[in-house]
Image 1 (cartoon, rainbow, N blue to C red):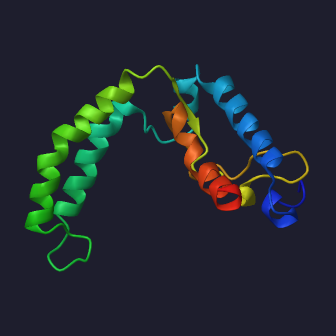
Image 2: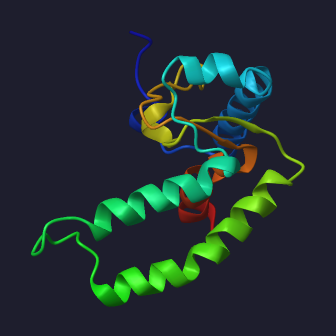
Image 3: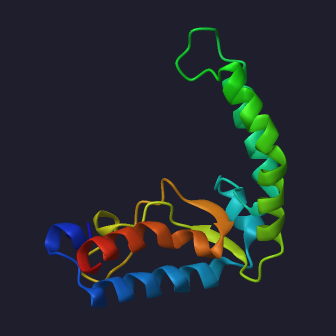
Length: 148
């Protein structure tokens, strides 16, 4: 046990967040060239090249759920999503061509998943292989809430 989490220890400061972001970026740089090894661990592949395949799988799963299931797509919802498939493909293609590499994304980076003692990251249960810039949404929300 490495001790308390950053969130349980104190309200994170901007300096705390700077260290957390540095740790996350260091980790991303360290593993960016090791896609196959990372995916071999069972890490989900959410790289841009998989966007359309994942969209189609979710669409089909929701479209074919039993009638009356609350998650089943209505005919109107199914048509709307089918019409947007080309936009989803285009967005995925833009990310494929982006300058930033795909790498490990923590998936749930917040003060409860960072150790207070050294700002070490843990709880990679929501981690995935995705574009490098994907990591920033959860920290951004926390920083804006605190310092917005």
